[in-house]
Length: 307
Image (cartoon, rainbow, N blue to C red; front, side, top):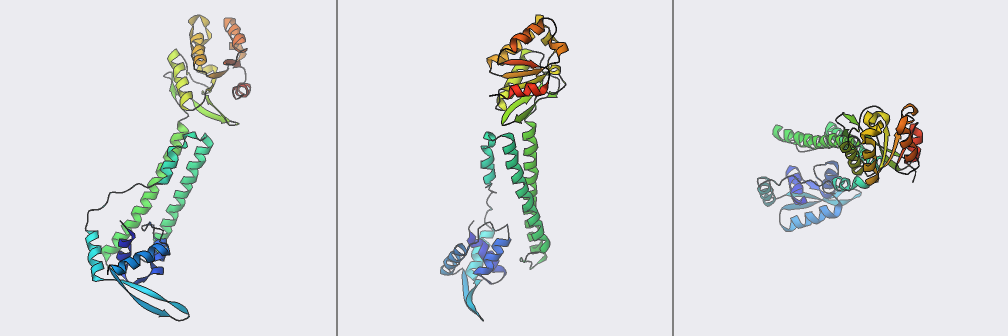
């Protein structure tokens, strides 16, 4: 579709000047062209040459004369032929979708700020459209059916923005929930945390996460999906077999983390970490840079986010 048919439609309603057309275009979201003077007047000149419109000069006191355009019979015929032609399918032209497509490179805060800004813009657009509808901007309402059609056009535009608002809010919630996983069949969740620009995965304060090597691999995958190689765990996240070195679970899990380059801090109270052979393992691992045990979460995080 071109701007020509929008102009023909408006002129079929009443004679208008180029300025009148520009004003209507700027007030109506339906007419998505910029409505600048060059575009309007260039189209009007072409339509005059094609005998689709006529014009007359209207003199104005203390103001320059203006041209008032009217639709011709040929113009009405062409407009009707276009109206009864097969409709074009809806096109999705949303620049924000292309912008969002490459937003995974942003930090969690940057991405949420981007989405929040878009959400605010859409919400503002809804309010503007609702205000236009409330004011009853001048539109063709020659018959009850025509009035109903324009009301439905307004409803379509507002509903589209409302759907977009619902969608972007869903995206924001979903991205925040991307910081969670189900692990160990326990239904407990992990989350991503960002401190001083360093991101890491944190297990829940209570709830089992690791009872097998497969669970460790799940956590490795989750770290990769969230673009981090740092992991913070709590004693409750580890199966009791982890603390019994005879089972071999601790050794197998730590080896998986080392193999995949996952820097892991575990917050384990002394009454657990300082018992039996596990104490010996804790002393040994705390001398390395892959896995360390801490009694306080603050100390664990401080080590975890070190470069």
